[in-house]
Length: 80
Image (cartoon, rainbow, N blue to C red; front, side, top):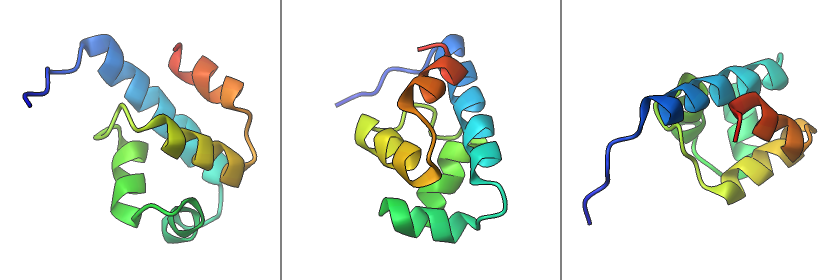
């Protein structure tokens, strides 16, 4: 299956999501948060740097839970 290229708006939303998650992570290490979310540190790094701008909803929900931020805040941060 061929993946369509992401739109500029989707890429920008991914950048905003990544920045929000980095701030929410605070002093916690990338590896620590990734382990609690049950994803690899590399996956979290890609999300935080915007290289994975459209992560699965279950991943976003798990990040919100682990970082103790409301899902609504993540949606507002990305203008979903």
